[in-house]
Length: 176
Image 1: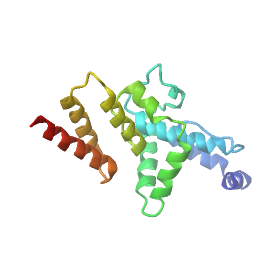
Image 2 (image 1 turned 135 degrees about the horizontal axis):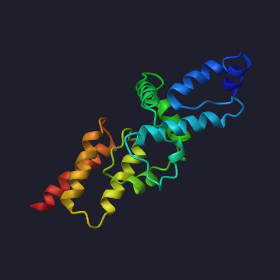
Image 3 (image 1 turned 45 degrees about the vertical axis):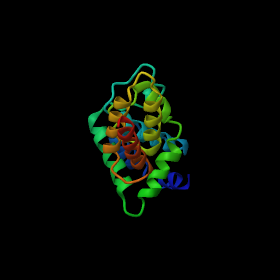
Image 4 (image 1 turned 90 degrees about the horizontal axis):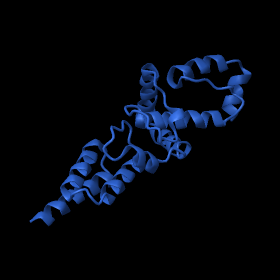
């Protein structure tokens, strides 16, 4: 990474690490661009599961940040990045592409569809929908309730919100 090399070259790595420590509770050496990808992975993972108690089955548990001040900084970074008027889409893409090794289906498999996920990217929402609809012992009313919760949490209009609403209407029609 050219930018990282320049930061190291002009002597700003310590300043950068001070900021990284505030949000990620770790530092980087500046020798490997993979360190930045690891920070993005840590950002995505902790943004999603910050309110959850880590499961022993969680393969990403080593990424978990427990310091509440760090989580506050992470949330600020995520929200500022995602809501930035010109860089928001690029920030979301960086989270998606560089955080893809944090498998949304694995998180839903471990923590379930009713877990208190804080940040819910679209891929996670689709995994939750699939999980809800595959649970055989779940009654249609329970599935509808879970999808309604997801519908409420989905602030932006789009396919997920439309699907959740559509499913609710289909469910209501099937009860008549």
